[in-house]
Image (cartoon, rainbow, N blue to C red; front, side):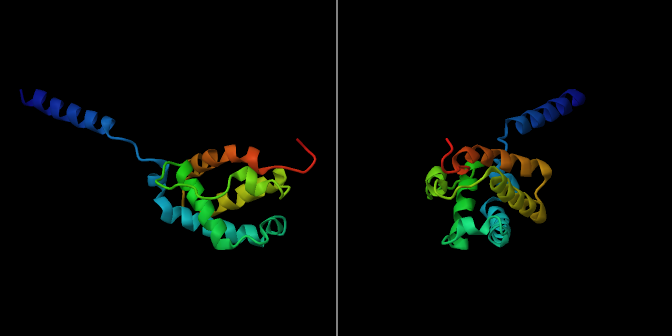
Length: 143
């Protein structure tokens, strides 16, 4: 009888664990505080990169950091609402190449590693951001 009761308690505990909701990626990585750190590092690297800096002339660093944090937060299950322009609108006149897009991704990836996100978390964040590429990469005269 004791064994049966112990088995029931264990089974009940396992079922309770299975029914508890999984944390969002946003919660898993530490929320807005972590995203703000990631994009603080990444934005500094982006502005200092001679290939990328010119694309951000006239865009205050703090504004870009805030928009990247908001947008990523919304995309990975956080409570944020992105308040910026659409990616298409904000990039249509900047003639961003595929190579430049990937250079930005590299800076974000390096920043995530520096603050200690796991490889899996990093990949999940990047997977959430990847669909934005089609609205960011644009070169005048090409459709």
